[in-house]
Image 1: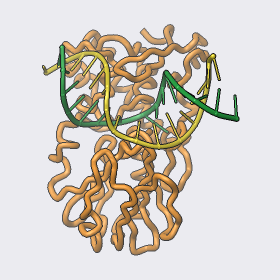
Image 2: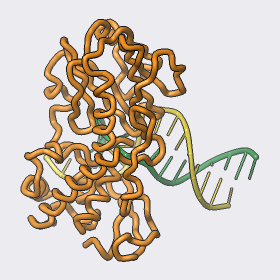
Image 3: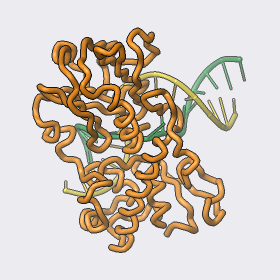
Length: 271
DNA sequence: CTTTGCACCTGTTGGC
DNA sequence: TGCCAACAGGTGCAAA
């Protein structure tokens, strides 16, 4: 579910509720996430207050005085602020309970998410160490994409979804960015021109920024911290729209699999 | 090194 | 109605 815009929406949503708040209890209902939740997490966190709420790619970082809790929402995860005592629904695996009678609750049916504690600098943690630049940051541009893609034979869609190239671009925004840039998703990454890489980098920034402004995309189960959905769905030009008319030229949108994931594109607007 | 395929999980949808 | 296959917003790993 969550790509960068959904994770950033979640970050902004939870921040005012958790910043500076002290953990009084941690409830682990099911530790079996992608990485098992540490049995000592409650003992570690109890009594500590959250110093900052930040994001690296699709990871959320809750910094405490003695370390950082790294959260990931996988395919189906979401975080909500609930009142203490709100009965858990199925797949509500983890609660951080604050001294404010509120709790941060992780819900994740498919359990591809994680909650990992590290005492070290989180950026050297194996989960984060090899990640590429932030797409909304200065280090990401057409020159970076061009340089990294030389010699690569995988599709450009697969390429921009690789977190070692650039973080945060998942299956929705990969197809959407390629539509905006006018580039077919199945083209070999190494065959893009400098100009195309520049257009693509700009398209990625624009699409992600626009999606953040709308609170992300809700397809089925993404919700914000207050339970509201994201409102970017009506702005999707190609994702999930196979056989429907292109918003720009009316041609039927096509779909194909690349890298094990579905890509959508307009055969007329994209070359 | 790159590329490919699969594994991890549960829930929903669509065809027969 | 029921069953079953296909598919879903992500990532890591093994094998070639």
